[in-house]
Image (cartoon, rainbow, N blue to C red; front, top):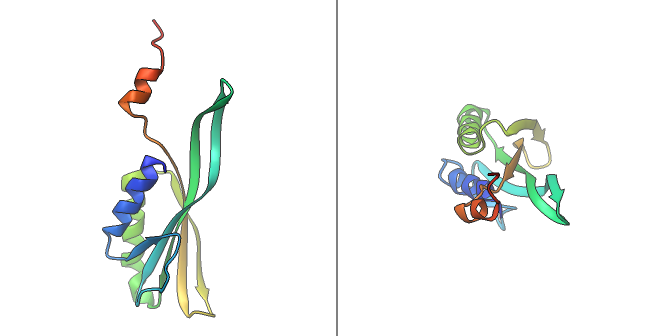
Length: 126
């Protein structure tokens, strides 16, 4: 898993909104969220393999009361900005008549943060 994604999941779980990865067996009462990686976005290929890649994912929040909207959106967007900078966007807001829930979706891009071991593997350009 990309390290930025793992950091995002951990940070979202610390917000006032309960979050799960990929879905809930039983949805919680009140507002709740889901975070997931959706697909590989951009890739840098070379030397017969992948040198670097970016993943795209989504954060979805569901809630019943319009009065909750501001606090929920602020909490999620502050968390996205803290972990991913500006590598996210609000994708949609909608009301789901079947469930009676409001649904807000953000999409984001993330990548692995290189480790010191990764840095050692790249030859110096001396």
